[in-house]
Image 1 (cartoon, rainbow, N blue to C red):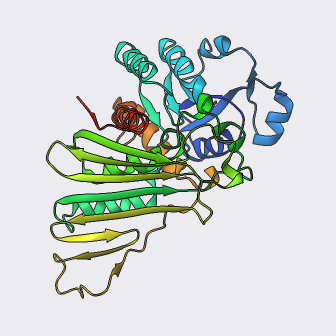
Image 2 (cartoon, rainbow, N blue to C red; image 1 turned 180 degrees about the horizontal axis):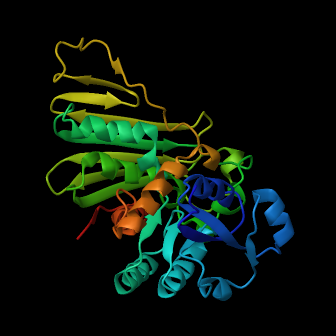
Image 3 (cartoon, rainbow, N blue to C red; image 1 turned 135 degrees about the vertical axis):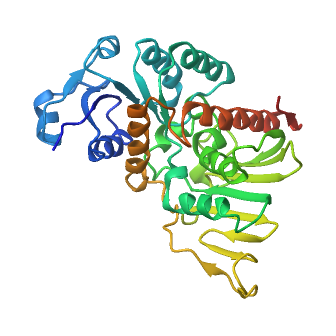
Length: 346
């Protein structure tokens, strides 16, 4: 068996990294060979845990300068993403990065400029696009079974309270940004996927509110936000980001088109013979039904990234530029929720 082609250095050795590392190694195309952490790491312990030698870095500059590393994978806290991303790009490293890319538009713009100048290849962890559910949905759409989708709802319901690991930082605006930016961004990004590559958001109107439950009292920003998007061709979409619900995780998806509709893992289409319009037909795909990183489809996403690297191309679906569009819409929606006014997008 040939050895992996790409060496990857991880920034951060926490919850997310615990899912990234095995997924990267499982591709057979790359291997994590270095880890940076703000906490002291023992190389012998890392070797025992992962089964092969891994360099431990306490100096990020030294990791960026490591000529053996081809890719930097950013699994740190969101507020640290822009600075680390730009430094990795300037060091000539290709980049995998967790969402959100940034907490402010100016930082997103600086990251975009770094990609333009360095031409590094990127992979942003909007991994929902690589899930069984959304690969199947994209197949249904590409086959024309729904016709032209004129309305889409993609909603994120996940109660992130004190019982959940990321709550310790994600209830703070300075660390998480907003409900939509820190969590519901997956749903808004999936909405754009469902509306198609030519969909151009023209205007967004958003409203936010908060739960009165004591569980969510520590949040210093609104915990539920609804964002309504009007596209330049007149079509409309809606996303809810709700991190204060007391219910099972639910990634609600409802698409309405000129030849049919889709609801989660069910659909109806006038394109398929004489389907009973009083009953849904079932799609045999796995649903996005968990916020646990262990359940995310990182392996298939990283496979596609390393294949694209080998071909010298941008990866499909989740490159920086795909995520850049989603973040522009997210920032506009958050601005609308704050000001109470519609926000137009250029």
